[in-house]
Image (cartoon, rainbow, N blue to C red; front, top):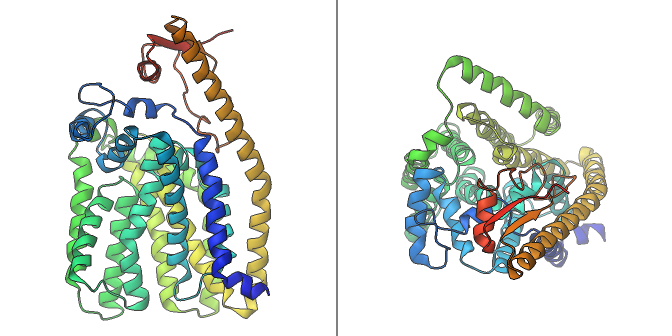
Length: 439
């Protein structure tokens, strides 16, 4: 009975549908905040984003004033022209697609274990840094959650070729993949770089270890991805806003800082990887599984440590490293489920993980709801003031207690109403100023 449930397609579909429904609820409860208001307006002329013709001029101006992540922010500004509910639906689907990609890469040639679907969700819920900023905040989701999906789709053909000797056959699909590779490379400074590195490692292993002949689209897609990555740094603002000073003392200080962050954020997941890897080596697991898991672990290190060259580090910058590290653990977990000697132990550990998520899930859900209520109340207050001719509005700050709230650890408003994000909110709601209420 348990075996049938674990392999049932209907159960699998139900689990994904349930996760989609939960994420849709959380997205609906997470309205605009901070940067979202700024991206509702064109960077070219500060007009409200309403027509597709505004997109290219706005993104071009963005490259001069903000940063070079033009693909991600093009999505943000595209959805700025559309109803909020549409983004909520699409973003929830993207989250589910992320889970499917985690599963597809992790399980190898095995059939999907339905147990691994809630396990993967719980892994993300418990261990992903600044969860709401990566998955529920509109600007953040387009930059971080979507970058994971873009880059994993780019990596998938290399993984399939390495593991199963499956190449992209139709020439038209190869062309489409090269185009996708460019946009995946252009998506983000961290995960895109790590993905190009990982694809290169897999190609090298296929050539040297597996003695395969070079497939032309490997080289062309890698070149396209690299060209996309370089395009990020062609944006003038990227060097002004993002790059660190190339001084040995500063770089070493950054190295120490991000090493401490890696230890605090990912120490447990790294220990899990090392323990599982040792077990697999002792059990003489399939070498390809070990190489793939190790490649994703190295990719996680690359995605994290490339930040030593950045001018500053924010917790959401580690989202890509988390995703790759989580997949490296999942690859080894999946493989151990086939081992009768360790199956019960692994299944028990995964069940404990799911159970441990329950209190965090309930606390996070409550925090998302409370944040939503506060944001909606503030919005209602702005509208009421505007309708009564009060154009200088004071708002209370938003309180939150967990990483599942889009307001957690963020500057909701500045003390100075003339600076960001206050002026962006004021422009959106059609009032003169929005400031902090000190009642």
